[in-house]
Image (cartoon, rainbow, N blue to C red; front, side, top):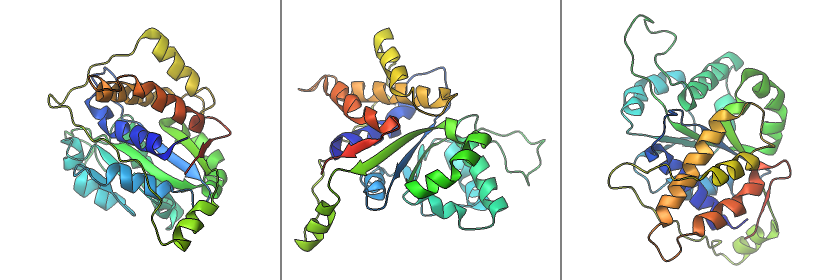
Length: 262
């Protein structure tokens, strides 16, 4: 998998909020891999240039409550965590509480905190949640996440580098590893039409056959990502580039993961 294609995939995930759909869930993406797989780098490069995305090192329920109005208003459609495991470096019950709110944000919506009066009217807040997770952390939490329903609400992208020595070589040469730039576009009408054919929809469904069961929300997200990519390259000199991007990224959804070629 080419790094630039994965960046385009993440960029389209941010744009997925504009896709016309009867399904309101936002979904999420978890990037899993061993150390030095550039997981955090992908997040910083994909979302760092968007003023309406939040890249956070940590979060708690109080912070979520404070930004809920902005989330409900759509000011921050994406929240990304370059080190998602940091959310669990506290008491288990506290971490589980935060996890529950994030689960609500990606699917049914976050209405109010548990300590707020439940009789109040509330506008539901939703957001795309993206996190980078070490493989060992993913492995140790897999069973619990499966039981809680956390797994089924996210697309799980497993990555590994083809040649990890290239990172050390880049440091040795005192140069950054070059990444293809992402072409950022925002729809002027704040709307992207649903444009998938039945065949494309079936192909996407097949792509996630090895994802956790009951993965309707990831399927919705993947279809929106595909529409966003299709819109992004329509009218350009490479109108079918979205197909190449999706095909290149698709191994990340399988059990073997994708090999990132630097």
